[in-house]
Length: 493
Image (cartoon, rainbow, N blue to C red; front, side, top):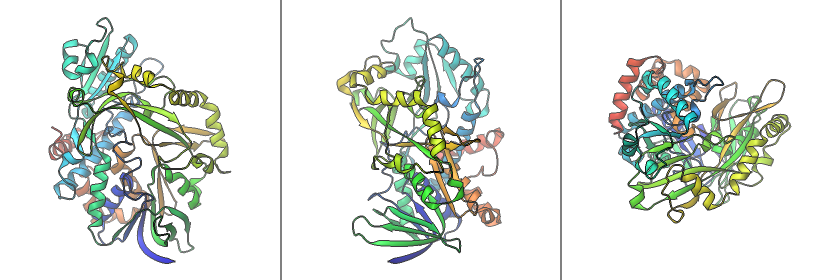
């Protein structure tokens, strides 16, 4: 069996691994990096444009990031945090564009207004309070609010045309929002990495075995699905960025920090319209409120998307129940992830989330007419024949052990890292890809702490992300400075 020595092994060819690989390449060009991907090309699972939400989650329009409290107020801390994290991604991409590492911005990011739309007295009151709190903060100062039918017709013509004039409605918008094709972005990053020395991409090579040697280095065994060749990789650092496949690999690693983690898989579907005369009339992302009991990634939205350069209009996503952890995974993924160390947390979550399970199963059995009826809340004139159903990607929500041994279902992303810093994994889903740069900086801080303290790495991090080490939530002047640059560089104004 061939043995390949490396400094870093990146498992998974998605946006997370590509981002980490790109950062490490910029910080230390001498590092020998190997990326292994189970499919025959990169960015084809959760990162692919048709599988990923693609919004460029910035908290501008996603109402689930600003939950309502029992007394009717709105909490905005998570929206502020996610917005600041997305700004980190924008800075990183801007640097790569300026250096000619990434192609023309429009190949992966396009200016698309982010709008929230609600109807009914209670939800209008909620949206107005949300606007008041968010627009008072410098991160959201450009947010606009309206209940005016004339304004709404300009903002979202398809949404308000032929709507009941007696129904009270309201909307907010940020005009410098974006649509991000994370598949194209990732493929461009990997293409650049492949052109550099000390980088190897191994396709059709799922990981079969992972274990840590006594000297601290990791053994990672992969098998080429096309040739049958086995390769043993040895590396000082391994990153598990394999989307839904990260949890089983983390469990195989045997690190203590993996104990108690489980996964709750959720599938998704879109209604898609490609008719040019309809698509060209809607240029924005319009988000509403999720149905009661729905998971956060199922917040309904009428969504302008540009995927591989082609515009389309999507509505959804419609969630569903599945036992697969990857779109091209196995129906046994969920059962195989149940271990003695996470059995109690997983049983606890399944017992306390029966409403969610029933909701997901109900979504699976919806008819096309049922889905179009949901669409008509956002597009009253929608016709069934103009929309087709398309499968989205898989999401594996985190089940995390809590004090007492029970479990909690977490909606978000989380880094799990070995105490010695030699292995890290990214678990979870939304906001996911949009905050990839911030998440991978977290990995660097936890797994390369000594190198990050050096003057050389500090200086290079400041070049990659000028706001590094500072708070965009607290520093208005810094935000204005970096946002002016990123909006201009990425052509979002």
